[in-house]
Length: 161
Image (cartoon, rainbow, N blue to C red):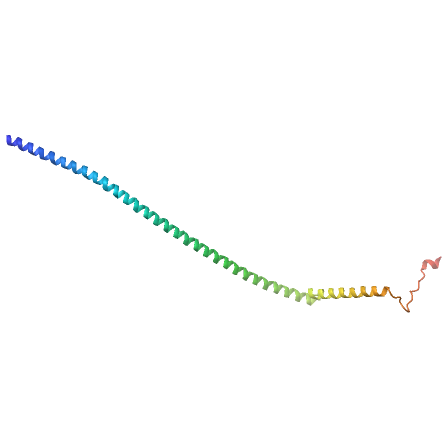
């Protein structure tokens, strides 16, 4: 029985020693995990920062592309608006010309003078008026030769009285 007791004690000592080794291995794993975990954490933070910067750079590039496209679209729209304005002005001028031609033809048929004809007549009237005024001024200084004043007529009121 002594051997059995001894065997039990040896077995208990082995189990104790084994449990102690497991305990120490757990502590070692914890220390290693803490040490390696810190390194891993710092490595993950560093990679995250790099990835974040890369994302910000890509967002910046994307923003620049969008702004460039918006500028191009704005320029194209402005160009198109200018072209539409030119075409509308051209069409309006054509319509206006057609209306003017139609109205002028209708006025010509009924004998209404054109603006140019009226302007020409106005200039001619002004010219003739200047000539008449000039002759009046020249005529005042001279006596009329061979002219007599018209005879006065008797009115019917005088005859009755």
